[in-house]
Amino acid sequence: MDAAFITLTPETLPSQHLCCIIRSKKPHPGVEAKRRWLADRLPEGHVFRKLDVKEKVFIEYAPLETAWVPVEGDNYLYLYCLWVAGAYKGRGYGRALLESCLADARAQGRSGVCMLGAEKQKAWLSDQAFARKHGFVTADETDYGYALLARSFDSTLPRFTDRARAGTIEQKTLTVYYSDQCPYVANSLDIIRQVCGELGVPCSLVQVDTLEKAKSLPCVFNNCAVFYDGVFQTVNLPDAAYLRRLLKR
Image 1 (spheres, rainbow, N blue to C red):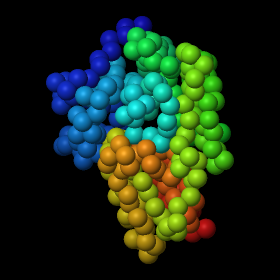
Image 2: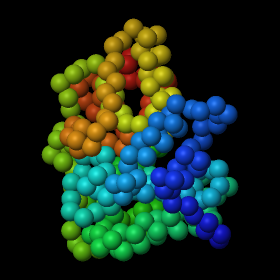
Image 3: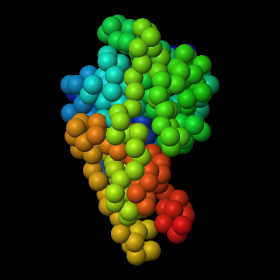
Image 4: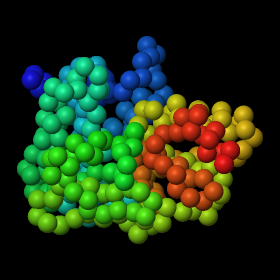
């Protein structure tokens, strides 16, 4: 395996492909928002490491203290995303990327690495079966089907915040919390506006644009969180078909 990986720096960020499947000759609003978000995160210790190709082979993680998720714990790294797709699957890149994250955690004297999982694998979450093969176990879980997975080096474990366990809000209309971390968010917001307009239903789009907002969210979060009728629904970015089913209940 030719593991020619690149770890983005503030200097290389403007010119590097960000590993999504958005194809556009013109600047894409989601991709450019992601670049701006990363530019602020890299000085905090955020890592975006990718294969030196214009494809989907990358890992993204950060110190838990500055990770935009409602998870607390001492001295962990939080793994946002590990994605290997297409012709690059089955060639050892996923293992190499995950091992590089674990090696970074050990080199930094961290207690371990954690990531979001679920009772059943979700489309927008990293493969938790793959993580479990590499020693991740359930560290915490919610009553609404999500889990926090951790690979601990010292027997300590991270946990969801008490507020994240709630999974409820007072607002009954469709409410979507989102950040600019994922390039697909821009497309998803356009779909939400279009479908809600067609159906004549109100929606509330809440941008999570600070660490404080992310840490105080009323549910699990991994770039997106959808509520309807006051109840948490999913961290998946919703498509039109999903929204129509949800809003016609």
